[in-house]
Image (tube, rainbow, N blue to C red; front, top):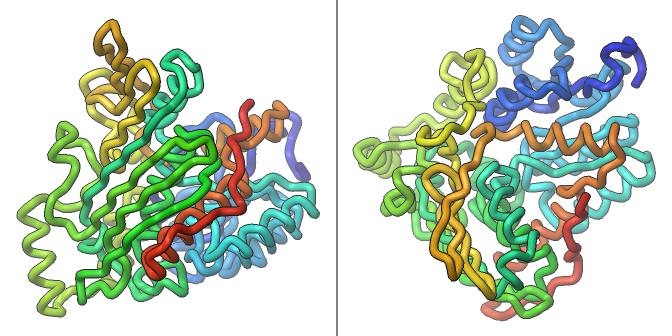
Length: 408
């Protein structure tokens, strides 16, 4: 790591490519990590660069090429628009930087393969993050599943209804050719969770996809049946239209942006064409007065029993095993066995960023394998592609790029 003092040589010096909404979700977690320091960023907006330098005193570039050329950056977190992930990840790899890439990894599996090949050729690490599978509650579910104490997994079911389509959306978020719509933008959270609990290797997908909101002309709901290579079935039911919300079934914990009254108002405004999506979106980006990352200390709230601070649940997930079931609980996870039900408390940050940085740090300084590496993320994207293809073609889609989870 060039330019580092002896005392700082094990701190990951992080550069952020893209100071949009995605960055505001992981920056609070990174700030609280003992393993990283934010030192640079790239964004085309003058206001974002000015806010960044005022906050961190680091370097701010107008393009990603400048960030890649910075000798004081060890790791680049790619949080640019989805259709630029492959371009910017490959550029970072060729510059010798390790990479954390925000989901979805890319627009298609071939782009993912190119990204992985570029990282391998350069000898750098590539991790794909910002998925719900990296949240404390899902990690707790996985640890129980991986322990074998409940026997073999026999079924996984996840159900998520939210208000994704009602939130401010700019054109690229609704354009499937640029990674828009819920299959690219929200499904990776659920697919990654299901694959994590099921061991990773999905054999086939059969799905139906809907687009029922003319003001948001992109996929807004889907139902998918996944079969793992060992025969384990999994289902994902997703609805992003903002009527019913699964938080009504989960103690009010969820991923909703609006109250019931606000949803009614937003829906009326959308139908009347009176929503300024560009202005609303700008208000959510880094440097805006209303964005989470603009206020020091926001985001990564510790989980304490009774606090319900883990508010970023993506629906309800139940995994069934030979000898019991597991699911989220108000303060952690529930484990159901022949002895009854017990709750295991979960502690950790509610924001993203913490586990990604920890995983990258341990890979670089402790020699541990990346669990959420590029090929894992490519396999998750392949499932998403299969959901879309199955919806179009009304047939089962067989998969060929699936991988098992790397375990430390």
